[in-house]
Image 1: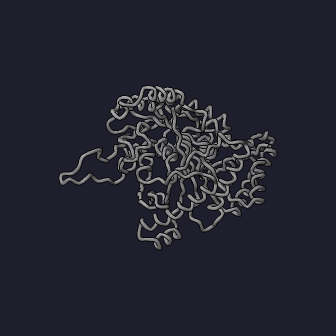
Image 2: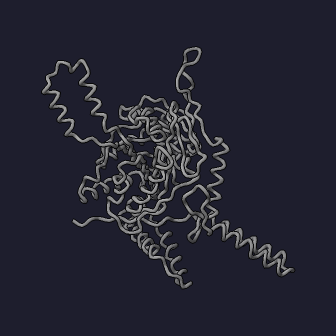
Image 3: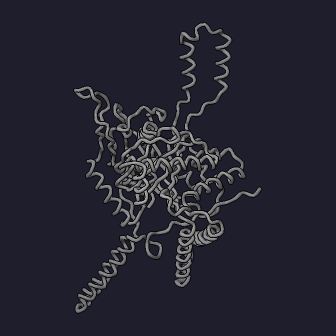
Amino acid sequence: MSSRTYQFGKHRPTGLVGRRDLGEQVVLGGGAATGILLGYLFSSVTAVAASGLVLPILLALVVVYAPYRPRGTSQRRTLYRWWRINRYHRQALRRTGGVWVSPAFEAGVGCNGTPPDAALAEPEGIVGMTWVPVTVRGREAVVVLQPEARCVTATLEIASPGLGGKEVGEQVVALERWGELLDAFGNVEEHPVKRIQVLARQMKSDPYAHQRFIAQRDESAATADAPQWLKDSYDVLANAVSTSAEEHRYYLTIHAKFTRDLAAEGASRGTGDEGVAGAMAAYLEELWSRAEDADLSVVAPLDEGRMAAFIRNSYDPDHAIWDTDLPQAHAFPRNVDVRHGSHVATRAAGSTESWFHATAAVVGWPTTPVGPDFLSPLLIGMPDVIRTISITQQLEPNDKAVERMLAEDTNNQAEMHRDRQRGKNIDPRDQIAATATGSRGMSLAASGAAGSAVVGYITISSRNAEELERTKRTTASRARNAHLRVEWLDLEHARAFATTLPFAGGIK
């Protein structure tokens, strides 16, 4: 059986035309306009007019095109991009003083015996949120309302899809069923859920936990009278069983914009936040049904305990992800240090050691056709790395997706035609991307499937900064094996970290 392949398009800049983002085009246009204005104002003095005409244009070109790498960072970017990043970093330092400290009380009660205020306080990089408990299929769940981001999210934990253990044909069928799930949400114009996030979390588990359990069992009074041959047989069996030193968790998050329609539906189900949460609970139940139709086994929706445990484990891997007794006020660690450009450091209360985290964005998807398991170098190729991979898809109906593909194809053809007129060699990667855009547009038009914009992020965690740098190199190498191009988000790791939490962020 021939293996089916999949194609990705090229990153589409936000500018009106060309290969630059809108902000960069504004800088170039402003430089040109300033130069023309100064040249006109000082036209009586030739030297001054020439200088006034040339200098603003040259300055704009340097700001937009000149590569630069500040001290303490690992990426070369343009001055314009570093200006935007530095502006956020200065604001983060101003808001936190460099180290955010959680106001949550770790223990104790008030003088009247009541527990301390359990209000959730978010660290730098996380927008304000409210957790509202709901019930889905008789199970407790939590809906996260983010007023500043004007969105609502809810999450399901699913069992491992197990794509690595399937034949190629089974992998194709599984992805087709996943496509049907996306169509159910994306192809309905009035459906408020238009964004779905997939999270793959890998963390280290204790490979000697089973052996310690055996030792504790042998010392207990309950097994004192057990015959020796039974103990020996169990020891032989335990030695024959291999235990994994890592654990994997998978999650699906749905995201809905807070619109007038969602507010109206929430008002029909209740008042205030509870009504909106009730409407989102219905969509979470729909996701549950669609996931089962796609042959995905749902473990449970994330309730307050599971959500707090997942977030806390992401910041502090020492906290067991299965310890769901944590209140929401303690979902975030005690300290979040945002002073360093190459990472963000977090420390839990009662600990003297910090965890170091870094997040990379996928800035280049495969430019050549790839198989359904192209992400396997990242998913299973880093066995000793604590990491979270997030892939978020912004869905849109088929007709809008085809229109967008048509606009992108027109822009690509115009860019290549302009390069030919200039006598410039055309980058073969641009040709491949243009061909892929055209073929994907044809496939979308023929299939009627929903379109999606895809973003990806990878967060890695280590015990010290030196180990984190080694892990960065390993991750970049595995990403290249997966035909991906990644960039470490230096100076903005605090807010980048949130893209690998179950809030479906990181996409415009």
